[in-house]
Every structure is written in C-alpha cells, then in structure tokens.
Length: 406
Ligand SMILES: [Zn+2]
Image (cartoon, rainbow, N blue to C red; front, side):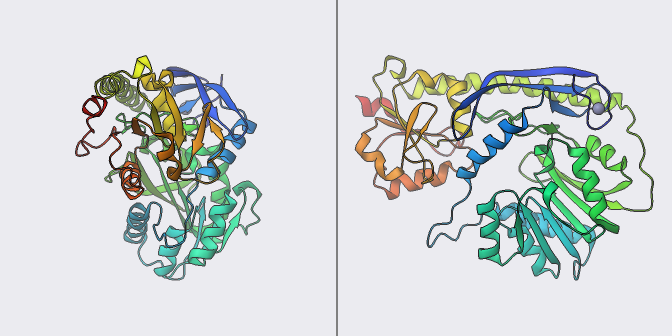
C-alpha cells in the first residue's frame, strides 16, 4: 500500500475504482484501473497504486497532440479569463509585483507570466511541452525553458514568487515538488498554488472528477498541512470562481516545518462530500444514457451513422459512460492535424473538412469546454443542417434527429 505523501500514513480507504480505463497513448491504448483512495489520517485523496512513470510519460506525449495550436489569424488565448483572474488575485494578495522575480512551473503558453510582467514582475517559465514553451517565447516573448521541473538548473533562493497552476496534482511526488520550490524561494518569498478542489468535485460531465493524470486530489486543508510541513505559512485561500478548484498563497517565513497531524474532522468531511458526489454522478450518467436513447432513436440497431466530434479523453469517457461504443460510429472528428489520419479508440480520425463526405446522420459533440466552438465550426463548414447532439448546455437545444430520420 502506498504511503500518503502528505502525512506518511499507510491507511488508505478505497473510494472508487474505474476499471479497465483505456489510457490513450500515441502508440496504443493501455487498460488501467484508476483506484481512488482516501487517507484516513489526513484526508488527502490519491490514486493507489500510482501509474507507472513510463505510462504517464506516454500519455502526456499523446496529450501534447491535443495542445493548443494557433492557426494563422487565430488570436484566441487558452484559459484567458482564468489567467486574468489569477493575475489580479495574486496582485491583490501580495501587493505590488514591481521588480519581483517570478517563476511559473508549467507555464504552458505563457499568458499568466505576460500578465505578471505587465504588472512589473521579472518572469521566467518552465514548461514540459516543448511546443507550448515555444509559443510562450514567440507569442509573448516570455522566457520559457522547455523541460521538466526536476531537470531545470535554477538558482536557490532566486525567486520572490513561484506559481504552480494546475501542476501539483500531476506530480508523481508532490512533496519533492514543494521541497524544490522551498529551496528556490527567497526568504519571505511566496508560493501560489491552484489545484482542483476535492471538496467541490464537478459531477455533471462524462469525465469523472478523478482523472488518470490527477494523481493527488487536494482540498485547502490537506494542501495547508503539506505546505506547513515545510514551514510555508498559508496567507490566503480562495475558491469563489466558476470551476471546481481553489488557490492558495503561502509565505516562506522563519518558521520550522511541522509534522502533519491527523485531522479526523477533515477526513469525515471529505468522505461525506465524495459519497454525495458518487451518488450525483451516478444519477447524471443515468440521465446521459437516457438522453442518448431519446435523441438518437435506433442507434442500437445500427440504423444511424454517427460521427463524434472530439478525439480525446472526453470521448473515451463518453463512450464508456453511454455504451455508444457499440453504435455505428463512422469516424471521430478532430481539428488537430496531428491526430487526423490516425486511429483513436479503433476509429479513423478525420478533419472537420472531411466530415461532409462521410454523410453522417448525426454528429455527437464530445467536449465540455469547446462544444459551442465545435457547433460554430460545423456551421462555418456548411454542416449546420446535420443534426447534432450536445450534452452540456441547457440553452443549446438538441436537434430533432427523429424528424430528420423520418
Ligand atoms: Zn495522509
């Protein structure tokens, strides 16, 4: 049994197992049981056993194909709203950023660092995806080093602020990651962390809150105890934004680290929230299947030729959740050129431009975050008349497939 990386206890309670989940890598699909465990001592939730590092590396290299690709004339900024919100919150919490030396670990395409630089900070980024690091340099002139945090050569006590935004939950050893941040922080320096909040799990998506690449699931209490064990003192925490995460800033003061104590109340609270989550999720998946049956009459009898827009993690989850894997799927559709022409989940991946030639009866939109963009793209391609099925916007009416079939 895995020893909790926060408190060290070997006292895990199984919460859920997602059996035979097929991890999409560039070469093949690897079955993996995602077993989520609650530490009965401190309340941290983590995957046990942890996936093999080679499988993780292979998964991320396949994910890199999903990375944002700016096409000519495409000036969208991924996560723009949340980056702007983070920058404003950091300034409100720390005061003036003028002259501060800032390091962001996992800076992706660098927009947060650009915003912090606009406020006077001197910024540096580290990004494991080489294509994203290149974008940071080209698009925002942000000095982003491509590589892993563990391999970066940086000066100890060199930074006034270190930022980890949606990074810590991916690390195989969060304790080692925080230890390295502690070394890199100047005395009095601040560490900003934003991670998904296990006390606010999103249940209304085909994608389970417990994903393969989130190896650890924190709440403000467990993150605070982890940081305090290094002598980092939490100064501020917030979770009042639309997606199910929280952010925290902790200061490197003169304090000694202190051992993580058990917290039975927090353990009970996490367990209670997650029991509610599993019930709500079960009900949501039942509704999802009912909507597929209602909106795609005849799909089980292979009368409908179905194309699915989206060839990534969400589609994998959607096919599992709905049984649509057994339908007459003609293709997956994806705008990413790196995927087009390959096979994912046993299906050919075609460009949106190639969709009309396949003459699908219906297009299933498979994305939580980008479904409106996908719908707009279909209209742009003159496919607005093909019935579509979306899952997430009450305001986006389902097209009437029954009428179309008749
Ligand atoms: Zn623990």
